[in-house]
Image (cartoon, one colour):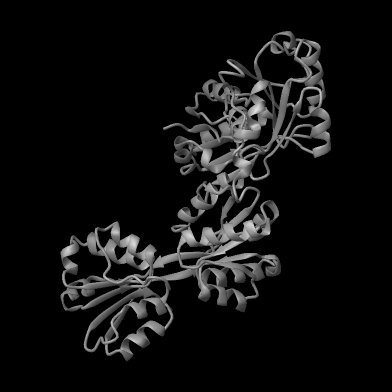
Length: 501
């Protein structure tokens, strides 16, 4: 195990991190990160990880000199802490990662370099520009336009050579764009050679300007495009119009906040990212299992007629304990199982169980009641649910003659230390998704506590109960899912955005 990990975070899109980078991020004690590291990437660090911004911006004073960064890195390593040096792109592609690795070697500190995807390739790919093509380019070169002031005269760019290559990818070239185009033309590149500038590649603010060498500077000035950006020169740029896929995604350019508990958010977040959205997971609730032992209940299952689950959370906790106690599905022989919706049914499937009753449309207490028999006289019914749940279900079941026993498996608590104000500054939401009334209530409470205005929120609700809670807290719901599933939630958001366009 190394003391220092020099990690490439890729171009910024959180799903372009390597598996190795993910693994290393999770065990960092200290993280020294660069300017372009995304908030989603930093969110993957452990809560108690010390985060230090050592970023450098072009043309302005650096927060910290390279020598000081290396000294700080070694200081923490000598304290036997796991130090993460988190860099944009790949550490060894114009990233000074080699200098930092050598500093570790010279100091006798163990280190590991974790490669990352360079923006030279990923930004071009997201803009629909292939690096090679049988009809357009058999070779490409990646260069940096940035030169140290003390080396600019001694190591000039080899323009006569570069102008002969099929494809050029130039990093850190925005400030020198005029010189780049002028020098390439002067050394033999045709003025009408296709050229493009891709700004903030792979991110929701990605912008692509396509022109020629002779017109690129003027086009970029009119568009107001800024760094970070890559410049691509060559016939492969012609394919942008047909191969650009990222900027055509239905939620491209939209920021969506997901308020579900962190244990549950990945499914929804993944589907939203697939549609092009920038997703910020802002879990305003935590699911905490109760300390109540279920052993007495497991012993009495042979006397139970119905076992009802009102959420996937409850089903997961119940079945984990059941199977964790050494029992198996035979313990539920003769017990009929009812669930409140598809997500809960899917949870049961993971344990090899199929529910007897699943509502067809209304995935809430009313729907489950409609699917259950009207006459439950004398039937033993176990209602496995959340603490402080609605009283509708037990009351209606008792009215049908059922002998209802309620088991509170978990409670929903407000998340701690969630700085919505800071997130609002860096990535204000276009939409906020709400998957339960509790997410609305705790989100609203956090807004009030941190002095934020709910009037600008555009909420996407999973169902009528959630929408009612939003109305109560003066949060505007612009779209409501037709059924309580993640698919339906994403679908209604896409429909709303399409209608806006």
